[in-house]
Length: 227
Ligand SMILES: *[C@@H]1O[C@H](CO)[C@@H](O)[C@H](O)[C@H]1NC(C)=O
Ligand SMILES: [Cu+2]
Image (cartoon, rainbow, N blue to C red):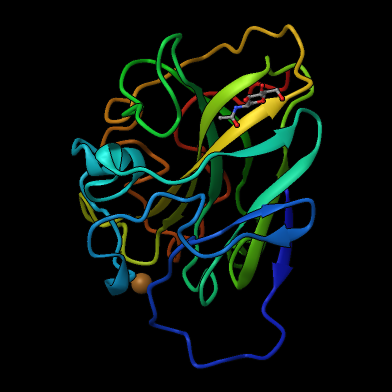
């Protein structure tokens, strides 16, 4: 995971955020061109119910459509975070292959189809520090072994600043539409569904990250598939 930090410490302490653009070949695409524009995106607000359909690609986005863009297998791509990831918590990235006969533009992402390709959790010390916090871009590698074809790619920042109560974790999510070219012959494992991958009682979701200071952290969801 590569993270671009916010350069100036802007007044974002309590601000929500969105992931509106993909970063392809080092350059951001237009906002909401290759990322599904979810209902109410202007609010920058989070999803909080892990059992809702909104946990998949954000509010109403299962039935939204964007443009699909080519990405070479094995290359680095990313998302912009606007204005920045201003809450503490892990950052996770999933992909789902579009089934035969469907397209990234029309598929809803349903079923046990999502595999995790990257994540970054906390560093431990006298308090937890979260490397993704403050980032304005997040970048990750599309595994070289991923087969060619169309995919949804899902970025997720889970904000844990008020997660000690049930449904206190906040999920900031976007789904992009990509067409993997030059792919391999891997067979992604540990597939999960959204909703379904998480429970509100998961130890990485219902957690007081401040006191007592945790010495371990259980990343939500499955293992990372590295190809
Ligand atoms: C995906 O890439 C393949 C190989 O270049 C191409 O034939 C196909 O048209 C592309 N699909 C989309 C939706 O861009
Ligand atoms: Cu917020």
